Length: 181
Image (cartoon, rainbow, N blue to C red; front, side):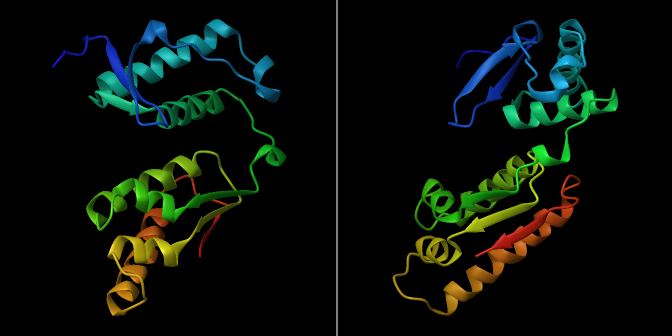
């Protein structure tokens, strides 16, 4: 196994791949109304500070691109970057069947952490409505059943309860509704 350089963090991409980056390798580009508010050097220093926070303050070896972008956005908002209300996505959707498929048949152990990560990823975009669709098919897939039964209903209730708890625990869920169907 190759050891990660001491000045690097592993950035986990959406496709599951992890890529090592040092603070100097990170390039940040702002778009939209906030792009002209900050000097590029200022943004680079802010990105370096966020990198330092994850690496040194939290002691993390890896971070998702979404986590890093969310932390950087929070820092820039602290300096006055504003995101217009109409730029927020109205509805963001996630397919529970796809999450169940990615977790493997009967693998609730992998499904629930994956579900929490998906919820956090979607909330970083500050939607007005966060919709998780395909619950019934997801439950039957995870339970390994073709027909609905009592264990399916129990798993159904567990998934809904888990989503509610994760959603209410997140700090960036203001002005957002959770829909599970």
